[in-house]
Image (cartoon, rainbow, N blue to C red; front, side):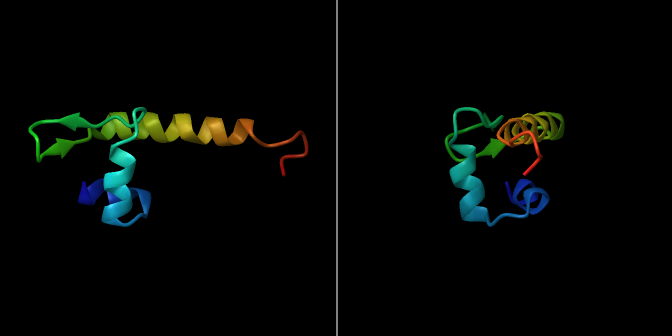
Length: 61
């Protein structure tokens, strides 16, 4: 989770909150261990970017 937090530029506590979102691609290996595949993280980031771009008005602001 530390690597994901570093990639996203967020704190570790924020990363753990994010990992609890139903749309976040986390795999629970055990009750205490979670992993995120790099490909899944990239895909999720692309989806989030597309969603945020869709919120812009026609002028791009």
